[in-house]
Length: 383
Image (cartoon, rainbow, N blue to C red):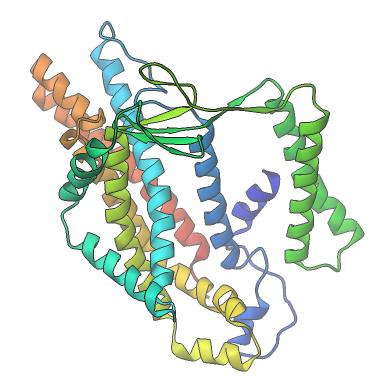
């Protein structure tokens, strides 16, 4: 945790002078350290992993974070819709980003099959209305799956049926908090010790040493503590439904897949365009300096493409949040769907629409602020 926070806080800060291989392009390669644009990509990956772990660890249902019953007020019902919209948008943004990165890189691949398959997938889903894609995933995929008793099983861990997707969940124990505290202190202390005892090693080696130390420490905590910090809860088929684990409803799954496939294809074009915007001479010059293809991509292309990529990603994320209002088409209880029910029952349409617009505005402004902050960290500082 401490090292990750240091990564984020150091982005875009002035860097110390480092030995240069030459002028021009060489400065891109020689400037690779934790304060260059490249760690921003590492930070994004860390954010994706963190969000993915949060999704994996939290046993969810459509209203897991805001329990609701018919006896509750409209205010509680509206809160359920807000929480569901935030939860749906967060997972969809993470998965769409991963899908877009993979498709965008595949479209630039020298492999004929990978390049053309990525192009076909991108062109198909980009040119179909998102509402039709959501309905396709719901009517054409989820509702055609077998029932619960005949659900499709993957290694008796993941089950897919008409009711949705059942996954294992990780239940934290009382020993999780001490483990997190120990790892957090270690992630701050290990870099300090390395800086004092081995100031000559590079940043990449330091990251590897810290990573190995944290992994070994986590394994030690798992073995030495009286009870495991995390307990795996597997879904088990009962008479009429699954017991234990995490369940994604069919409506949630269909809507999430629709948003991910639609937005992910647009993100793929953003990624591809950002990489193509890097002048071909940069690639050729890096090879002339003796850099491998991986180092060329990592040290030369990505830092420049990232500055072009982030503003467009901001637009795609905002569009995804607004498209989540299509949940009403599949019956998922999101912000707009629940608000529509409140309007029908209370008749306060003007007030409710004002609240709906304010809620979407707040969510989009929050995401936009975060992306603008990240963009400010990676952009070139002009003197």
